Length: 325
Image (tube, rainbow, N blue to C red; front, side, top):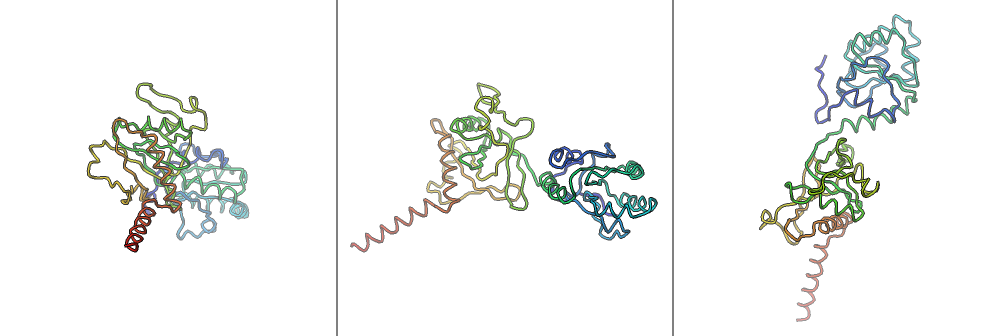
């Protein structure tokens, strides 16, 4: 039997976290094996073990959560109690660690006993198998998605997810506060949690559970953003579209392209995100600059490039001047 190693690149999570994340959406309850909830989900997918229940164990996907739907339950009911227990026991012998029974099926006491002895977990849900299978995919993918935490403040600016990063004291939170007062929304202050949507190769930003909806403003202290500015001043999660790196103006001397021809990117979790470096100096209006950067990004994403447009206009005028001569 292969070693119990989770998928490379996936974020580890336990059965307890799976149950908590799907409590409302999946309507699950723990029927057997509460102590086993600390076991790690090795592959964030479900498997319907129909062939395994018939006695064929080739390529049995034991690392996945086993889903016992109406078809599997109907087959088990057709077996004698002795054979049924033997087939369930065989799943646990091959390292199956979690079974989910759909359609509100009651767990037979003898099945519960062998699951408890194996240290496995049995969950049950009232949902139909097809509904549960579909919804469960979203929960598992979200939990197992590659993730990272970065020091940065993220704001939704004119529909664009913008993360501001830079050394402490450069004004990230103060800039975010100014953006919020202009009608934009806070996603995360100081620490941004990122998860990767593998299917679309995009990143989504959110705040950690402990600091969500709060900001620290130097000289003022901790504020609860929705209480001060209303619920529209917060955004629980936003796709990350743009990274703005704040640097002291001396750090950027001789580095920045003043025309905007050089397009910078940051690679985070394998995803390339457009990046803009903004020099910070006394008197610079960072709120206005970040807002303008977001609007500029929207134009670029829509296909309008001001640099290319200006270059074309200058070339046209130069050509007309030569013709006039």
